[in-house]
Length: 189
Image 1 (cartoon, rainbow, N blue to C red):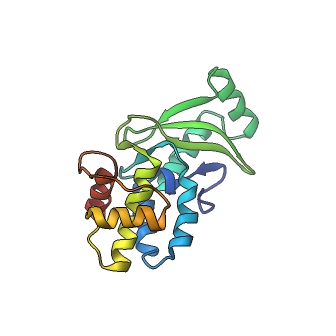
Image 2: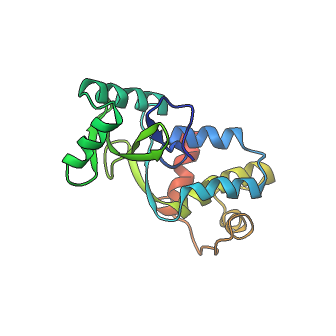
Image 3: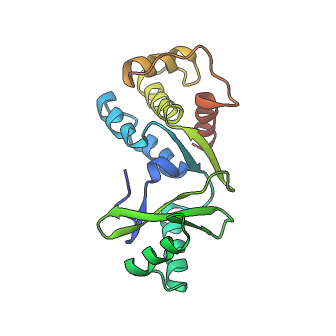
C-alpha cells in the first residue's frame, strides 16, 4: 500500500519499508478485524523486503529524494526515465542524509513515477521475509485484542493459523525471523 499523502512524484510503500509507519499502523489498528488486517497484510507480498528503521520519516525521505532529483535536473518524468535507462539496470541508488542508500526505479502509478525503496544491506535497514513481518504485525495486534503474550509460541501459532492462514512454527528465536521482528517492533514501540 503506497502512501498517497507523500509528495508527488514519489511512490513509496511505507507499510513494506518503514518501521515507524508500521508502528503507527499497529497503534492505530489495535482493534482491526482479522479479515481487514489480512487484507492490509496482503500488500506486503510473499517474498523478502528491506525494512528501514532509521530516523527519517517517509515525508523526509520523500523530500530529500525530490531535492536530489531537482538538484540533478531529474524531476521531469522524461529526464528521470532517461537517467534510469542510462544506468543499464533500470534503477539507480542515492544516499540520503542519514547515510542510507535508497533505490530509485520507475513507478507505475499515475503522477508517481519515482518508485523508492531502501537498498539491500544499507545503514538503518534489515532484510525480512514478508511472512515473518506479517506474523509479527498480526501477533502484536492480536496480543492487544486478546490479552495474550505477544512472544508466546501459542499466540504466534494462533495468529498464523486463524488470522493469516499460515502453518504453525515449532519455535521462535529473538535472533531471526518472526522473533527478531516481534522483538524489534516491541523495542521501538
